[in-house]
Image (tube, rainbow, N blue to C red):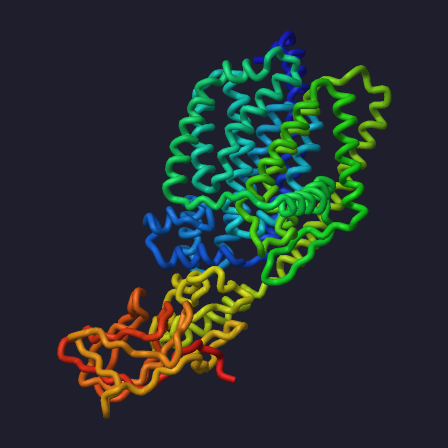
Length: 602
């Protein structure tokens, strides 16, 4: 029973809990708003570019195989991302909704992790809403969210940056070992999604050290090391193990670009990409299919963004104690992201718009939110003479940022939905499943879906490998048909670029037996390419011949007794093909033919 003496303390506790619940309720409402917005963006999206590579490999290899999970994907070692893609593909092959669901779930986890670290830094203060609102609505994270394969890298990294920083703060305060276990597990999980997660322990160390610094603690770096030494040593061990695995699997793509490339990518990435997004920009996006959208802010926004960031840095350093190192830490993280992008993605065909796609800076949103919380945590220099004016300015900035971010989200979704992949996949799935008993010669998908640089992942046999009850996609076929640029089934012809002259033997041409390899010369040498050969033959019995260029893997080609024609896809180069019968007792005579590429008829 509650006594009279208990009531004052009970009322005080209730009064203390009321602001706490209010702050938390608003924060969760903001996260709900973001979840709804991002769900709409995900629902209007579709598979794009690398997504089809992940789906194609998921259909080509067993889910837990080394060939699938440990694949070097353009310099990325991301077995956990491949695992998620494999599970989504197994649930609903080539359907977008499992991928979209994984995007929303991943974003929700990252947002909750950010709320946690902000709560640990600021407590139940309304000031927490500002950094949280920035992370939730900033367009900086939009491109990396909407593109599934990019999100499988970016979202785990964002969640890990926030969660491990929170665990480091908790362990430094309480010394409870469960925070060490949690931080190390999350770091390891993030690393198997994205190699950039090597920055997670360093960001966590910086968060704790900067929190000590703004609190006025003497020797904050030494204190941070001493308070959480087991965590930092454990993190180092995790990084060493990961580095050994990474270096033995992934071919290094790091290089030293020319200064002009460094300057151009840095200018475009910072001036036209990162800084406008801090103010809710870029407002507008540009796109040339099949490239992704990139930020296209008006010049006035670029100028205002530079002035606003410079002004904010000067004002906070002047008004808040010991906040200079916070700004230096943010700049260091952004420069590290820039260096990673430039050193691995530069090349003669690299355009400056690459840096304006924003996905290479997406994780910086977490770092900026943490930095803002650290600045708000710092004590003021003197007293605020006009607290109402400051609050009014803060609410005005929040409103302007929100409006700009929402508009940038709308314009991005509009640009991102201009993606032909969904319609192409829908038509292609219908074409491939309409007559499953009719095989199709493997061929590239439309260049509007995947460019030839992605070979062999741009082949129909790879992209649709997981599609059930479909036509058998082979390296040989007796009839030619292909998928056109819209994904529809259409008759095809062989465009001859080289000829196979008649053979030397009368009434046979080139005799192919099991006894020796038969050279089948071309009228002129062929360059290294993916060729289709028209093979006109007469076989003594049903059997198989092996056909290909010297030094390359040959293709087993079934033949039937009597006269026949088969089209065979071979790769390589040379002045002659090689053929040999692999069926004892079967002799095959090869007549004149042609070598070229398959094109839609007409």
